[in-house]
Image 1 (cartoon, rainbow, N blue to C red):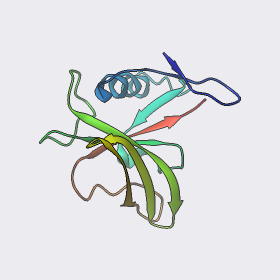
Image 2 (image 1 turned 180 degrees about the vertical axis):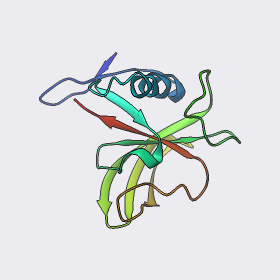
Image 3 (image 1 turned 180 degrees about the horizontal axis):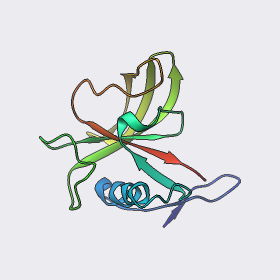
Amino acid sequence: MLKSGGLFSVPFRKSSSHSRYIREYVKNRKEGNFNAPFVAYRLNEQPVEVGDLVCYSRESSSDMYDKTGSYKSHCDIVVKKRPNEIEVIGGNVNQSVSKKVLETDNKGILQNKNGKWFAIIKNNA
C-alpha cells in the first residue's frame, strides 16, 4: 500500500496497472463496502467532485467496470469543478502531465462523450 502525505495517511493500492486498483475499488462497491477508503462507481451513480479519480479505457472496449481481468486504463484526478464541467489532470500520459476539461450535466454527472470513461473513484478517507 502506498500512503499519501499530509496530515493523515490514506491507503492506496500501488500498481503500474491502473486496472488492478480500479478492480479492487469496484469490488468495494459491488460488495456494499461503501465505507472503504476508496470506492469505484459507474459514471451515472455519483456526481464528480474535486479529489475524485475518473477512469477511462485505453482499449477499444469502453465499459471496463465489470471486467475482472487486467485491461489497459488510466485515471485522472479532478482538480476543479465548475457548472457543467470539471478539470482533470493525469500524470504519465504520453510521458507528460496533461489537463483536460470534461463535460458534466446539471447534477455533476460526467458525460462520456468519447465513450472511454467508465468509473469514478471516491476517496472516503
